[in-house]
Image (cartoon, rainbow, N blue to C red):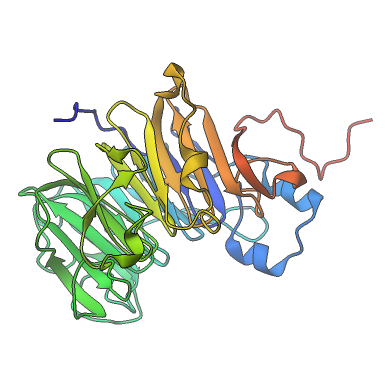
Amino acid sequence: MAPHAEAIAPRLALGDCHTCVLQEHGAVRCVGATRARAAATPTTREVIARLARARSIEGLAPLRSIAAAGAHTCGITATGAVQCWDMLETGAASTPTTIAGVEDATQLAVGATFRCALTSRRDRPVLCWGSNDHGQLGRATRTQTAESAAPPLGLGDVTTIAAGIAHACATRRDGAVLCWGNNDHGQLGLRDAAIVTTPTRIEGLPSARGVAAGSNQSCAISADYSARCWGEEYVGDPHHQLSRPRDRPSEFVDLQGRVFARSVATARFATCVLTPEYSTACASSDASRSLPDYTAIEPEARTDARDVVQVGLSDAHGCRLRRDGRVECVGANDCGQLGSPSYAEMHSARFVRLELSDTRADPTTPPAR
């Protein structure tokens, strides 16, 4: 049996082209921009240096946890309210919006164009809002958008939630895992269904204590702390995943064998497990496309490497949060999402320290005379 590890509120949130960190006093600082900027604007040394400079998100109440996907980031306030904002092409953030009707939130799941919150209310344990073109709000419909937060149908006694691009999953107190939304890559763990508009139980999984989702794949942490994953480019076993039916959950292994997990982060081409000993084990289905690949994310072989408390992945970069508050990132930096102002690190194969202080000068500001 793997040793127990206490829960730690998420303080690291990665979107497609940005990284946000929740600081100890409840404020949030971010680097990067929206992916639309990288596609529309030529990348220069000046642009990278400007976008890599950490800036505070103004207008937020003190937060206790954060989550992100795409250009979106949301956080839970000390009172249980939820505030969300978008990263803009300039690297600035939109004015944070408080989500009406969401109270007593305890956990967030942020998808590409929709969001869900787990609450402490028995009558409405999960609330979702946003796009619903793939049934990802769980309301038995496929209406395009729903601005108001409402519960997915038939979803009660929930303990954890997670969201991918257009699908979501949840665990119940009895250990069942239920998923809904887009299933075109087997990310719901269900066969013969392209879209599922209500929460549906995944059969054949052992009792689960947690769930994770990213891009078009999903993972569950079992009661014995083993992890099982399924969906597009599932990377539990980089040697055999191509021959495995992707809608069947399979146990996560790294290159050394079976791994215990206290949490899982997954994104396209890569999956990382944080062990109860606060070290990481990662695997990649295609190291040439995976940013980062498993060799870069794994901590150095030192006794002081076992101090990682959270790992975050996007499709193009990954970061780890250490116990002392240091954040180190690897992968793509075309939006400044690694926090590195170096043009030479448009893609970094090594971890770089994300500087969250105000000590770095703004490269767009002329020096004082």
